[in-house]
Length: 464
Ligand code: SAH
Ligand code: SF4
Ligand code: F3S
Image (tube, rainbow, N blue to C red):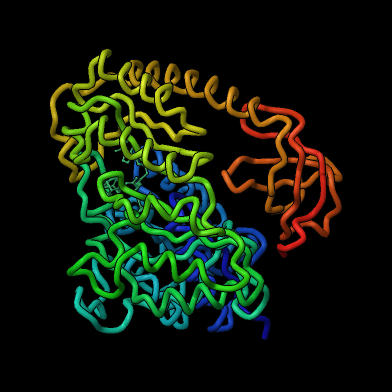
């Protein structure tokens, strides 16, 4: 009998990408195959995000469109995971009655067993809240088997036994204890829990052993890995050092870091560990001390700038990216312009910027002084235009340099390859397909707003 097939659609952050990879891997072990597209699948799993209202609405739209497939194939099974599943739980079934399974992020490990017997004529299964196997913070086995990691799209889930992806995310901690005033994540992903160090190292060695070239250690706030009271791990700095020593690991990154938890020992690793890449994502969120305080971020503009200065002293070429929220409740025009000024002062290489969005359960939801949608849109486009010019100037300054590029795949044009430099710059250049998965040396010849154009100068003789 041909095996049943699964299609996973992933929305949201890298945590969800990691979780989708893990689910795919667990399902494969139970004999499921990965479907190429939604209409060929026996089971469609939508891994969802609720960080902003728009993200949550998009997911509901997707689920509603799946009704047509369900009408064509009544045996089709539909599941929802991720943060919308956690937030809405059983309410999702009321809104989308053709669902068969709703499972929050902590319950992912239970899905393979449930899918062995679930059929479309059975009542829907709803799993939210902490896993029944959770042992709290002081020891005990992992919450769910975390057998595989992978940078995967909806239909590309790495085979555990085959080659590893060129680049993989590796979750080192789950949850968040920070409760930033605007953010729904701590309510949906629970408290911070660090994965045991040995488990992380084993997974990292396995990925590199199967040909993985790049690893990104992942968590909402990786810097608090192994904080006293957490289950597992010692501190983040020694974990990073140990992962970096794995032979054959050419590139190491981590995300996300909270600026309030950035010890000098971590700063000092940039420019010191040879495979730790010269790029850091350091969310600023806002440039005004009053707004930072209202957001509960627990650092000031001055502290952020001091940290950036230390980082650049340790590693002069360090590229920085950040997250910005415009239109937090009560944000005045002057306060917004302070954020804009920070883009210039720091000189970020790139930013991710968002209009403030009211989220259920959060403190900011209850704050007065909500900014009208059109005003938030105006601020966002002004901010983005400012950053566009900064990024373009950075890109222009790179013309004439030679960068080491990890080739991820083929570019849009025939004969073109696409990859990333150590500083995360996107580089497209002409070259042979066998360079995919390898390190190429590329002369930068042209600057574009979001990418660089290069000319192949050679391969990195030491690298893969
Ligand atoms: N843990 C990470 C990222 C969390 S979510 C961190 O602390 O940086 C990614 C980004 O989404 C956040 O950095 C923030 O800029 C944005 N974000 C979170 N909640 C938001 C909200 N309610 N409205 C708009 N943007 C939001
Ligand atoms: Fe959300 Fe703040 Fe936690 Fe990041 S650190 S996930 S923004 S609460
Ligand atoms: Fe979204 Fe949940 Fe990640 S809200 S950003 S999927 S932790």
